[in-house]
Length: 219
Image (cartoon, rainbow, N blue to C red; front, side, top):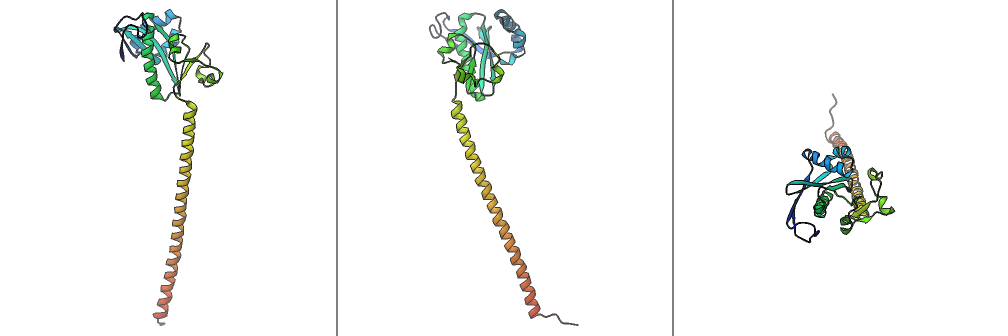
């Protein structure tokens, strides 16, 4: 993903036509990542073990920053954001945000979470999480200290209600179909029973007719 930013679009500090590019992190990025994490006071060893979470931003082909993106069920969290040169930070954040939205769409994410404090995120609609919203925070993240910001991408209640109604309709349809199959089975069983009795009585009638019209000669 590449974007060219003109003066004033994100920040007056961004040089004109600055080329930035984002991609997934690879093992080749570990030296630069560890240096970045260490300088920022982040737990480099822990983050290294979660390398696959990280997205990289490059400026003119050189490593310029990184952000972790973790998905748990219908929730995504971005974290450990840092840059070599913070003059490109807001421009990089815009690119990262585009990638986060694509990942969220691909994984059916309802809500985005972060503890990053940049005003950039509040300008993009993130709000402090109140007690009601924090109740939805995945258990895996509840041990993290600090203030949470969150943004709802999809109305979770509306989607769950729709799925519940859809499932209820599906179950009703299954019950009706099962009842229809059972009814057809009962009719078939009745038909076979009647046909069996009819065949039996027909055989008896034929046997009686033969006895009456063609009596067996006694020796």
